[in-house]
Length: 155
Image: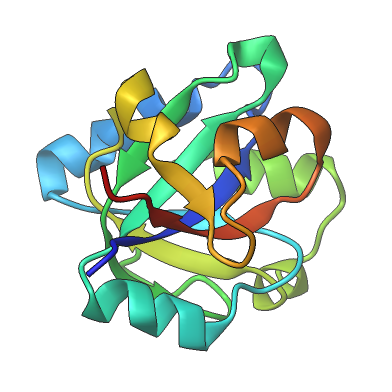
């Protein structure tokens, strides 16, 4: 069976390092909540990823090296942050700075993830768009889509 993946673009906020800030919490608690603002990710796709032990792949912007990261999706939640959810505190600053109200998070998706690890080039090269088979790496160079559904190409 081909491994499923959801590929998300990530943006760094001010001087905060995305992976580092999330990993501070994941290293101590084993998991951390990550917020994807904007269009919600399909719950059908999220359930499929969880059920098949798929990958959540993250790509930083070009300014921060266009690096690829990988993590596991443990759970998800759509709505306001709940008491007890552990996430990087800069999220509060980001929302306040851009005058977002907490309602914005209702339109986003909270992802409970494990440790965020660097992905090596050979692993990235195996990822192709689910519908067309186009390599994700190539597609991300010419397209600004923030969320893509991929599969791992078999050798």
